[in-house]
Image 1: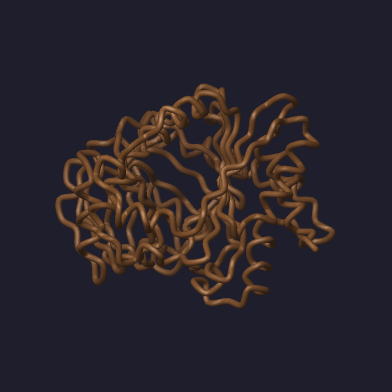
Image 2 (image 1 turned 90 degrees about the horizontal axis):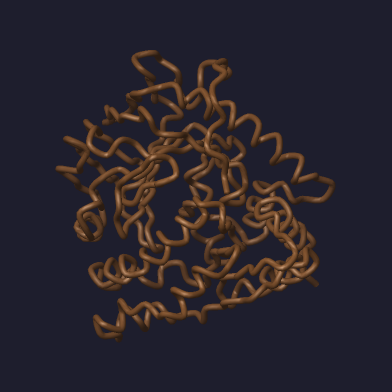
Length: 381
């Protein structure tokens, strides 16, 4: 029997996050372990009048590709995939793995090469999203592997995941996320009025320029759960040092105690306490990999622990995260890269953020409610 929370989450994604309409084509991407969730999403999409199709990946395919494919095969992009990106109206990405460490021992350069080759499809789909012609949402289906990463039992992890989405018994998830949307959009409107942010914390003193860049409230339309406000900083003006106390997870592989120094908008020095070779391989992926593509405030205070899962970890209330690599064109970003790697800076104890010289954030919280009325921020597609 399917957990009723799975069906409720499927309903939330189809009717709130994507707002599917009759006749629209929606692609459901997930692994075989996520089959119960894929079925419920398929059912809800049909009820909405949409035309769902599934793309289910077999476990271990990526390991075989990295280990055995030629360079040409590794980077091959099918014309079928290119056509599909132009035709689908929505995509649901279901992150679910039986083994989150499957690529831990893989050649980091080949992993980087495969990721970079797929970025053209991702970038094109984001262009369609920015044009209002497509929608996307990513979410998590709880598995034993992710529960182990989070150091929880599967039952506790399921409670954590579904609790963060507010799809428990007796809850009205749509009402909850509409309330979150109002709060986050108010904060985004205020952030739109600032030019420079200075982030100060343990081994961290970083300045980013956000002048002329829009802030977007992540209110459940792009991820579920959600709860952040993000932008793409001016590419040439990031200066200073930052230390990421949480492990930086990419493709299931963790890099610990990352320290970066920026000059003129680029990483000029990088080191890691563990996983340094992987860090350097990703930074050397392409010209844009050393530039910040995203800066964001994590504002979901119901997510209060590190789980090795960026879907949740980047929203931890009281943190900020910064992504190396590709930026968001819709927000004014201009950086292009095959990389988009989120790293989390914990500011919950000693952190401070100054906006145009004024202290606005301390120990993980904004110091006042948003009070500036400004033009509406860019709406999530």
